[in-house]
Length: 316
Image (cartoon, rainbow, N blue to C red; front, top):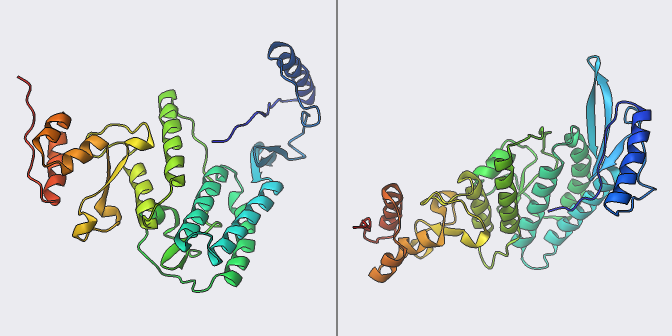
């Protein structure tokens, strides 16, 4: 999550902008006891110059007898993002931990940058500049690059499946930084925004959670499932409120030949997970508080691992 203490106010005329600046500055100082940075607080004519804000630079241009927004990634951020991606490519060439971890870290960087900056109207042009420089380093530093590799997860197919820029190293995809299109920001209802803030926090923790010997395929599919299940348990329909509530269950256990493929994984709560594996009556009696549709889903998962179905608990 990013903390921002700056904002922009748009006015129709320069006179209105100057008056607003004085009024807002006075209000912040007298009412909120906050000091305003005089060097950064200024009036900008966005018809002629760009105004920078939170890593973007914004101006307006004429189109079809009206003014439309033209936005880019700021020059400073383009230089910074290029630098960190080039550095990560070097870490892939000489891993600090493991090759898979370094590739996963690189892909996280690419996804984070694209998701944040894709609301810029010219994001594809700006990221093309970054991609040109990053690709030069990739070509020079990384050996064994291929155009084919493992099967992409549903989320990866949606994001990069049609890209001709996609490359693989050690069977793992390297997400193409230059493959991104502008996306209009959407306003949502308050209740949707509240859920999105929780989901965003959980997703951030999922992305940054250490793998501890797990495969990258497992980590990628877990995130894909979180989106596919809309942040809810596949058995109970309960909305996950924290990362600790999320248990990733292998339908066919790895001990029985199960894999980390998307189709073999499912996200469930701890209660549901214990009931799937439970063979002791005391355990089922403690956690069995499900309705008929939930019991059906639970018993289907129990059947796959060779456990007997549970009977629905009826209160007398």
